[in-house]
Image 1: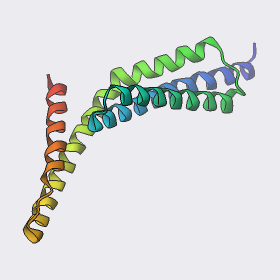
Image 2: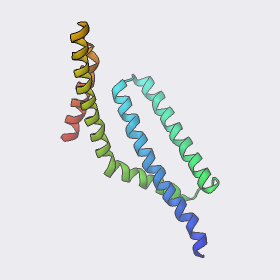
Image 3: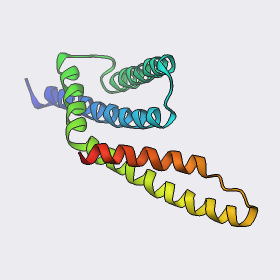
Image 4: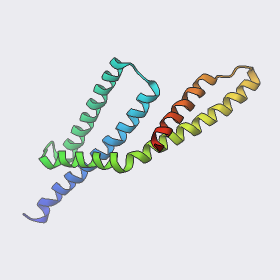
Amino acid sequence: MGLWQIQPQIMLLMASLIIGLVTGLLFDIYRRIKNLVSPGPYLTALGDLCFWCLIAAITFISLFAISSGQVRGYVFIGIGAGLAFYLHFISPYVIWLFVVLDIYVGICIMKISKFVGKITGLIPIRLVQRIWQDARRIFSKIRH
């Protein structure tokens, strides 16, 4: 087996690792949106189904574009390894970034709300309080 026959296999393995990493990132984004919206059990199940259908479509389209739809066993191992790597090493930092962004967005909204309140006499504080409470709750879970 020459080098020209191994190179497409290596490219396919690298692509499957990247697909696993992207899946992990999209999962963190979906999880954050789900925590902000707090849907009921039926909408959660529907959202989960839609999320995994989207991930399956992205995976199949990517694999078809890279290898003309040819799937080998190591592709699934590569996707799983990329996802495991992301969830173990990268996800805590992404979640921390989401929490920090929530806190800073909450602070900015609070300042804008106070400014608007001084001008109009109305303070849209409930949304700010909700963002602040969610960010503090999530941040306290990350630290412990």
